[in-house]
Image (cartoon, rainbow, N blue to C red; front, side):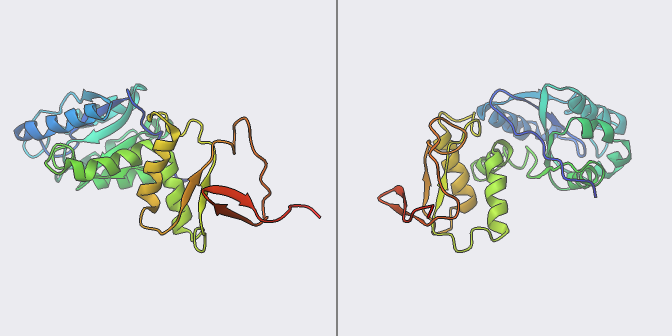
Length: 250
């Protein structure tokens, strides 16, 4: 297994591609187009693969055409993520035709499920790329359940902080913690009017079921002014403020 490679997060205005690397979706055009409209509502621009609406038996176009669509999306530096329209039974035939060197040079999020997981597993094994097991556009963002699946998917694709909070929780680093204090979050939530709003969404998603007070100060971290805090000294939250309970020197 190669070292894990995380794709860049999505930002408002980014271009995303939509492809059909398995089953045809020509008879499900309404659902797929609804999914693309939802992507646009999230603030992304959408580009269709050349063979998106093609039918070739049980697959969306020939194997060569499907591989060409994937290559085109990965080769274009403007395309920041690739959404699969649906699953099927033929994605496995593409595994030995993927351009793994290209994927390694230009890591991008690949979103899909069903037999798309065959492609995702191959990409992880050969390039280390993290991909996203999520409903295809036809079954997810283009369905009546879009509001149930979309917000979580969007947060995972756009928030780098959510992966860090989850890691801390799973590692047991939050066991016994009485409160969390976040500092200045410069550049972490550029898609939100304020860092505080983006932080609130990330914390709710990762830690929402914990009985744990969370506070933020804009005066600690990579910012000016940057308040000095002693590492290892006792402190408490009083009235929504961080208060040092002891001196830090003898």
